[in-house]
Length: 326
Image (cartoon, rainbow, N blue to C red; front, side, top):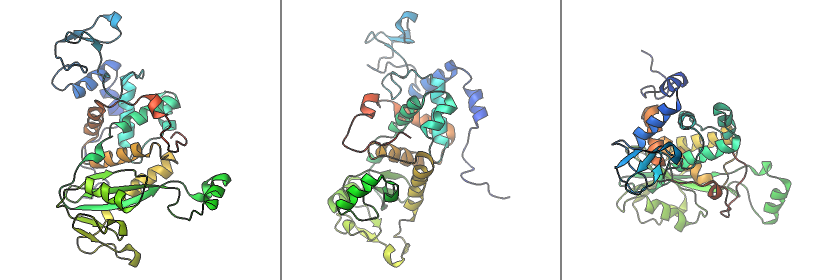
C-alpha cells in the first residue's frame, strides 16, 4: 500500500464538513462555549458559576449573580468587543490553521465576506493566541539556529537604498530582523523570538532563557554562542559540514523554510512591528501539527482566553516599521 502524502494520519475536516458542523450562529456559539467552559458556564470576570440567561435588554446572553454583570463567551478573550459573528470566526480559525503558509487578509476578507481591515484585525487576534508560546524552558538537548526576515535591498525604494548606502551598510542581513530559535530534540517543539540585536549577550540570553542549565546545546559555527553557560557543540557550515553524528541544525531549516514561504508567497511583507505574532503563529502551529484539525482549532480558542488585542494597540507606534497590512 502506497503511503499517503503529508501527515495523512491526522484527522482532517473538509470545508463541506465544517459547513455541516456549523450551519448556524447558535451552533458556533455552542462550540465556543464548550471549548472555553468545558465544565460548564463560568463568569469570565469573577469565576462565579452562579449564572443565568440574561434579559434580552442586556445585550449579552448571560448574567452573573456574583458580580452582577452580563457576559458572553467573548468576554476576557481575544474576541472581546468583536462584532464579527462567531460562525465567521470559526471559518477564519479553520482557514488559518489549515493553510500551511498562512492566509492573507485579502483572501480572508473575500472568503468570509468582511472588510479587509476587519480580516487583518481578526488574523492578528488569532496570532495573538500564540503569544507566550516562546516562554517554554527546554530541559533536554536543543538545537539552536536563527534566520533573518526582511525584504531584499533591490526591492527597497531608491531613498531607502541611498540611506543605507550613505550609512555604510553592507549586504546580506543588513536591514533585516533577526529571529533566533531553539528546538527540543525529543519532541521537535520550537520556541522562537524576534530580537533587535544580534550581539552575543542577546543571543546567549535567549538560549539560556529557554534551556535548563544542564541542557546540551547544538548550533552552527556562529561565534556568539561559544561562551554560553551550557555544554555546547556545533557544526561548521562554512566548510560544508551540516551533520556530525548528533550535532546538526537541519530540523530548524524546515521550520524557517515554511516561515519564509509564507513571507514570500502569502504575506509578501512581515514588518518588524508585527513580526513576533507571525513567528509565534508559525511556531505554535508547528508544535501542534501532529493533532487533527478540530483539536488545532480548539487549541487556538483555548489560547485566546485571557488575551486581549485592542485595535488601537495594534496600530500604535512601537518604534518599529509597521509596513503594509497582509
